[in-house]
Length: 144
Image (cartoon, rainbow, N blue to C red; front, side, top):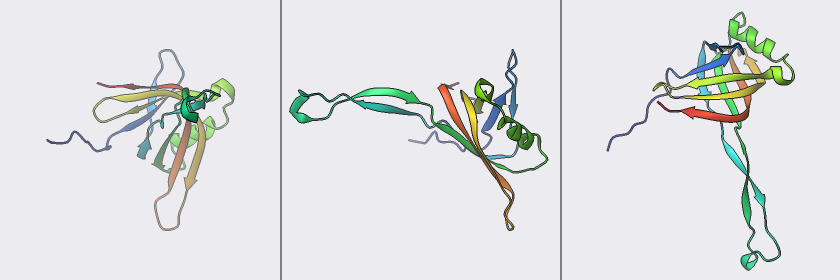
C-alpha cells in the first residue's frame, strides 16, 4: 500500500482585510506553518456515588489553540509593516480572518488575534521572524 503523504511545500498563510467581500493577502517568505492546535477541556463530574470511586469527566469547552508560522524577516516588507500595525489594534479590531491553504487546495479558515511577532537578526544566519496567533471561535477545515 502506498502513502498519501505530501510535502508542506507551497502551503500558504493568508490574512483577510475585513472588507465585504473579504480579500485575503498571502504572506510572502513564509518558511513553515503550524495549523490550529485543537483541544477540548474536560470537566470533572465525580460525585459521592461515582461507580467504585472512579473519577468521572464530561467534555468541556473546545479551544482552537494557536497558529504559528516562521518567515524570513525583511524589515522593509509589507508583511513586517502589517504585523507591526496589527499589534496596535485593540478589542474586536484585533480579530482578523485567516486562511491556511494546503497544496491539495484544502484549507483551514479561522479568526485569530496576533499575540506574538519575534524578529531575529543573528550574526551568522538569515534574519527570520516567528509569528503566533490565538484562534478565537471555531476553525474550519475545508477539504477539496
